[in-house]
Length: 362
Ligand code: 6MZ
Image 1 (cartoon, rainbow, N blue to C red):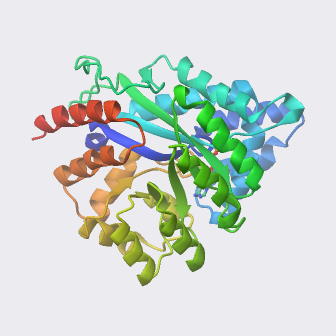
Image 2 (image 1 turned 135 degrees about the vertical axis):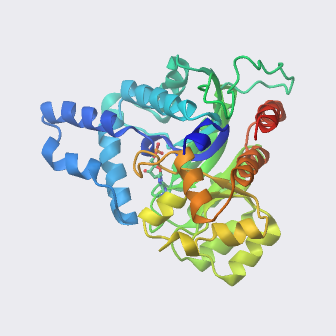
Image 3 (image 1 turned 90 degrees about the vertical axis):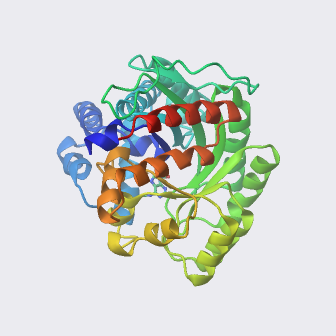
């Protein structure tokens, strides 16, 4: 575990409100309890519960959103989440979040996202590179400041890029608003769009116009795909050829074939899949087949807070469950650089970071 923590890693599937520290959620719940908005004792056990069905996870998100939806809290959780990932040597984080409107407190989707960006600016524990530069001109990587892999020194710099999530409960118009916001915020590090939310809700066709528009405008797209069985939707999603997909749990033969021939990279979230019982046990997890087929893969947390995990833990879990050695795990981490949504300049910097770390492997 320690070794995986010290190794540089990339995190490409992390939902902001799913990655909050338990201690922060409890503190927020206590404050709302004191104000009489919620009954603290009712929510404490919901927050601390460790195994939840997929259905319960989405009920928990509704509670978390009650606790976090004001600007100052959004800023705070963003700062903490970035600091937590940086502390386990994540060198590049693609953080996704659903822009929220809450008229009663004067929150628009834009002001929600501004609060997220404020959180990136507030990080002081590490140097955060978050704003996309329009050019691909590279600055030399400062090897002194860089994460020094495999020798236990803590991360000093993290690249962060943002994905705006469309929630499956949203309308076509709301999804389009999110895409337009993403375009407006490109200079603030927004690189793409995610489609997520309760997979039992909504229709793929509702989001298609907004996703097509996003693609036309050059945004990158990742879709939650196949969290529950839904052959028609899975096939349509694969036909859309997103840049990446998340989960891919409930595929059948035909979908596996389509996926493999398309080479769409898959964001794999082991603990999330097991905890929500979308996959019954690790020994039958599709990671094995995809890894053997050399299909593009990246290990991710999904919701490190909700599932009490970390990227290092996911690497440790995969290494022991699938009997993979350190070198293989390192290569898996390094290969993820190919699938990031940031520009070529960032890719080159990351490649340099991994190359340097590789030289230090025993
Ligand atoms: C689908 C998920 C998810 O956007 O408020 N989300 N959607 N499947 C999952 N697997 C368990 N985990 C999280 O973060 C929370 C939101 O992310 C999506 C849900 O829409 C959830 O409400 P943000 O920051």
